[in-house]
Length: 205
Image 1 (cartoon, rainbow, N blue to C red):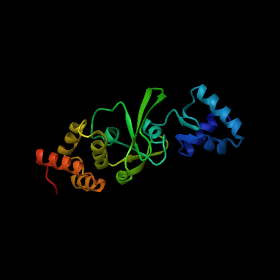
Image 2 (cartoon, rainbow, N blue to C red):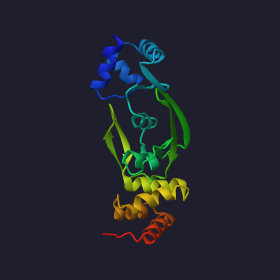
Image 3 (spheres, rainbow, N blue to C red):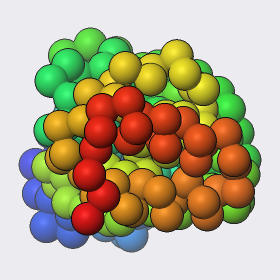
């Protein structure tokens, strides 16, 4: 199969990020042949090698790539707020919430490296996200309200100014933020939200 047909098939299947197993099903050859085929495509810069057995099309978004690094994960914090157009500055890192690892990764792409930070959350705080479409495939991302909670969970008050700016502009569901704060079971998170509400006299409808 030539490279154009292979890439077109990945697009048809909405596989912006794909595994060597996905490629094997498309190419219909043995694994050794597929591994060599993918190696040559990556060397020619037709595709991006993310890690062993995982690849991406060049047109796939950084959110699709970041969201594929580890199973059962979602994009959160400032990157999620930027995606939802609640902050103006595109952060130089993408935080990916999961329940297993905390680790920093760097993925090279045409426009530069994607800085990805895997952030471990307790299972009780792993909620409030949904699946959405990227340039080619799907990825999971936090709801705006959960991104706020995750910032407080992962950064304490280091990024509090972002939380305050988003909340005081009334661009999110404040009741949902309070609900999510309670679900985490962290009294300090709930107290921080209440403090912001009182500080900016935010009305709760």
